Image (cartoon, rainbow, N blue to C red; front, side, top):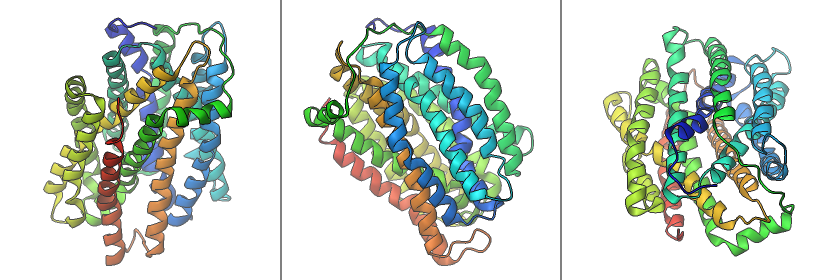
Length: 420
């Protein structure tokens, strides 16, 4: 590792893989639940339950992927081989997931969503852990995370715009097929840039990290527990609106044709805000900057439950303001986690993979809980997309706009006890 300033080429080559991952992540986390709820015979509550159950496997697989990534030794490094295997697994399983059969649809969704999440873990966890091994400089870690998340936002923008450019945005199946093709092409071009353009140091052989040693980390490092607790709650606060966005815009605002425009506004706002949060992190620290972003997003989102079909302009303003916090949410927590990892690691013990495996597990758990919680509660109040009742719409508004504010404020309060 080094403490020198990272070159632009290093930043770009490392961050390049974030584009294809985001191009897959947007349809996976936003469009797929709605697609299965609307275009199969599965009900909304069943879709949410299945996706939640499939994500529970990450509780086991994500830490294991990180653990074995730490232990793995080869002439090509320990992160790159895992990422290559994960990319191949994603290519096959995601295609199957977006082409469900007419029979055994629920089993198909369960099995292939589990395989997709496993492939995602095998590529993304070593990718995140790698960032803790490229530089040890406090501010350079923020630059590295910011570059990765900037490219991730660019990939999400691409996934958003491509269906509109090809005039298939109203057809969920065609949109998913097109985005899958875009994922393949971007992966083929950018993934080799990361593998060949970013050097991975050959790590010395380390002692095996046991479960007892991992548990001991939380006892010795209470800041780790604080950070991960706050991160999970904040991730859930972000995941609920992402999961329910299409339903909210279509049924509450009654502006289904504006979903693309609103998502574009949100991600562009995230790009605009990212340099600001990086600058703030240098001036007041990463923790306070992240907390500030939570306050900003909450102040904007607190008005969402009171909007109706006449408030598109107000919602667009809220979308832009809350979108400014996107860059902070994506870059700063991961950079703080990298700081913690480097303080914990020794020459004898490597914890980067397993800790980022737990980090990824918490991320996907929050996303799973958002789908499970949101869809099950909506199902309990009799939510039907074709003819929603006033109770269902009120519940949708509270889940979309009210609960995230409460969760972010709780996350803010927890982070008050964190010391860098």
